[in-house]
Image (tube, rainbow, N blue to C red; front, side, top):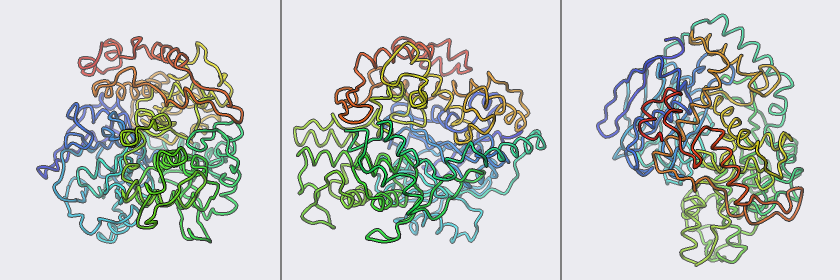
Length: 628
């Protein structure tokens, strides 16, 4: 095969052995790579019904079809396991040199089974696997761990994916980090800790062979050139943090734990403010001509020296959603999160949840005792120092931090059992995954897209916020078009997540971020890489199949229609300010849109997948297990 090796590496931590599984070309045509292939590997290797922390929950890597080639933004991999936050599929993406090293080692995927008794560091050196003690790596932050590994081997070609202290402490939303990038959101870091894996390192020495290198090089050059033009200027200059002011203007910027959608101090935590006062450089992932990550530093004050990459989702979670208008505190919180290997979005929403617990009187000052503040402290909205301290407490699972480290769904349950309270009404998660940076009370298509999402509260898997924001729908109402809009948007996003390619390249094919512009070009890239004969329709099916295998995984793990829901607050508590004031998504509206969505997907009226649909997609074995 061109573009692939045809080989999946299996590693058994119990027996300290590994073996190679060879996959046929037709299997690759269905699952391609990224989150789709990673989920399929989970489907094939998980012990159905196991807890996320059980040895029977595998860690599944899946490389990208374009990794190690000239194709821009193609250096990404998918990572999947059953999520400890949601109990369903946890699929994540990350990029950079780790991906390319894995490709050069000639592995299309890696499946790690079982669990180790002692902390280990796995080295994949082409076709050789070593199980190394991780004692010297324990306690190190994510960046320090990667640097220490390269120092140990004396080889910059060794690339690593690691967990940090938050992962070691099994913070339920801990990340896996590689080259400063995060495979985040669904708690992979704590799954790694349950297996006592501190790091997976790869050294690959082989080349990548493609079917038509001349054509692939020419197409890649044209896309790279376009990526240096106006279609990506927003990302190159300010990064995604420029979305803060736009979200505030339109009234969906999460503020004070999603109480409101506008923030009085938005200017002080905007991408423009960040650019003027704190940005020190921009950096790019491997194979990326865009360079969107805004590396920013605190130069003075109590958090001086804190430096990390800042983007919209992490920024809003620790600033406006915590009521914090101090950019230095926000940078410090993101820095803590990144270095400890912790999902900033879930961390920020967990902190804002704690702040609301304090402001409503459920939790008192003495509930926030810690080494730093032995008498406790007052984490009211806007208290930047409290936000920083809570980030540290969550990382270390100290005091109340141990409860917040469980995520808002479990934290609310624990707090409500102890205090006879109803904090679950403002625990802002979907299926256990904390909500992203778009208040969905005035983005009704997106609200439904989040509700039905296979991953939980994720803006990267459902792109339905875009038609709402762009005016393609009336974002304050519902109508008969919403099912098709949500279904098509998530399948569109799933194509990029399966190749996988960064979605920031989407306008660089023809200038339009749509199927008509991108799919013919993507088909040509696939064909030049593999020698296949993909066309528009087959590219479209990539997204359909990717979403379908994730939904099938969830059904087999116990998904039920009532799981497709949104937080109580979005259904019952209208905002009082801004363009979204007075709006909620009622149960009736949500049920109506869900019915339209299930119909648009070709599923049953209660959201299950017909057997024939799965067979038509080439998933015959899946049809036998969960098809109706």
